[in-house]
Amino acid sequence: MSMDPIFRALADPVRRRLLDRLFARNGQTLGELCEGEAMTRQAVTKHLAILEAANLVVSQKRGREKLHFINPVPINEIAERWIGKFEAPRLAALAQLKRKLEGDDHE
Amino acid sequence: MSESKFIYVTYIRTTPEKLWAALTQEEFIKQYWFGVAFDTDWKPGSPWRMHYADGQVTDEGEVAQCEPPRRLALRWRHKMRPQLAEEGEAFCLIELEPHQDTVKLTVTHTMPQPDSKLIQAVSGGWPSILSNLKSLLETGKVILTRM
Image (tube, rainbow over all chains, first blue to last red; front, side, top):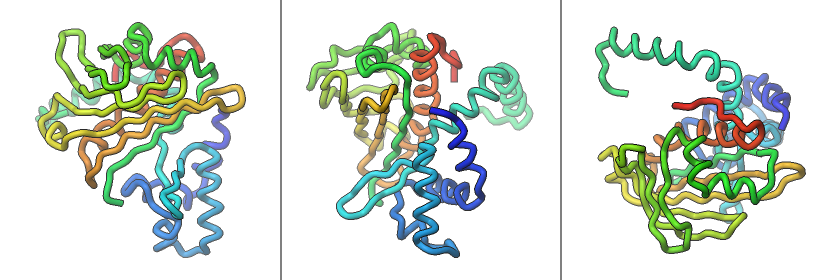
């Protein structure tokens, strides 16, 4: 699967906000996602379709409703391609330093 | 929504048979699952256990369904962190579907109660495991050797 649809989907602030809202509460219906958005139901449907085509959102039927879930796997692939494999040792060292300085022994 | 649920989907350029082998064979699992080993015979009703090389068990449960190379369902109990363990039993469903020249892999992890800490914890782990699995099958190499 090409990464182009992922970047195209993420290029829009409305779609990033929809992902933030699913991150805050996963498994929402179209109606719930329309609440608080100053746009038509059709517009939200269109944004969700673009997110689904990019595999950033996965939907599942529950009775008559469709629930929407954030799918973090493609974003993780982006992170690992450009951050993880190059930066892992340095990021780990930085995280360790931060923990030491902040005196936080938890994870 | 009363339950806690996370759905992870990735498309991997491989065959359902190869992906199934990667999901169920010890030698494969070790390579992309950050050194964790899996003990089970994969028969419905059989127990399974996930543990580190030193023997410490992280998670365990029973195989609920096993239909190669399409569907694997696991009853899932966390054993390491008491806060997560006390939430009780989660359910993990792994589905494989051919999609053009790839296989669509869907992992659904569910907990019957809302705001599950276990679901929150696994939601951080699964994406790295799946990215590693995809990389291993498509290129022969994993991306990260540790989380």
